[in-house]
Length: 318
Ligand code: NAI
Image (cartoon, rainbow, N blue to C red; front, side, top):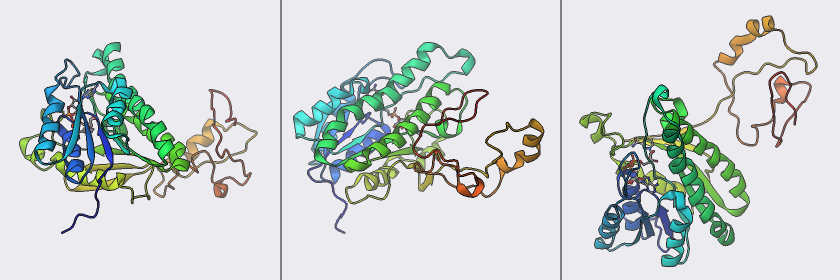
């Protein structure tokens, strides 16, 4: 069959592409005609050390199969150097896959400032720095695609990952805000929550489980999302692992609307609390995030597009 979803002439930057998921992306895009920047610093799973051969090996693998690739060994903390490699080698960048990551798992009790800060630097600041460097090129050429990598740990919580979980959920906020800013420039930004066999998961899953979640199974979904013909999604979160693919969305429960002039009594809150556990939630989007549904708000008080600041003891102000 002829492969219709191709990437000929497009440049894809994949961070952390020396192993696991990143390597699967790099091979997939290269096989479909893309120029690939294979970035990887080559450290250990907790981010210690460096090894150039990790990225070089994947570049060699791509070239041996007749594809086009360049290796880059910088940390995502220096995102501008990675994007510069794309520009110097291929003249442009079309797609950025922010995938590099590390773990510094510790119970909250034992987590140090350093464990917290370092995970933030690689995941959140790394995603910011690479995206920040690519953005002006995306704006100038009038198109760009970004995939950020979140985690079930951030979306649902997990033991021993306060640092990782909070950085991963911050990446969701970054994704949604960038999606809003990119709309006028044809820049699409989505987040994926993968579950794959890699050195990150091989210590916590059984060989049978790992066999069913090969990283190669995630790559096609991501490639579909960043293809130029896919214009239906931005600011979305997808969970992908093994044969499973799904979209995660926020929900808003039934709301409670009382007088805007009188603080609610605690007894009334107790009486009406069950509506926050209702079984028929609505689904707010970025457009509706700051608005209160008129149906539950006869006073018509709205906060569209405005930042709502709620401080202890006050009512929301625009
Ligand atoms: P992995 O450890 O095989 O891949 C991460 C790669 O990033 C490594 O090759 C590493 O050398 C590289 N890297 C680390 N720090 C870097 C830095 N500062 N600059 C450049 N490269 C750096 O693990 P995996 O599983 O492939 O992880 C890929 C992404 O998916 C990560 O962001 C991870 O947090 C995320 N993820 C993975 C899940 C899984 O089930 N494996 C679950 C949820 C999220």
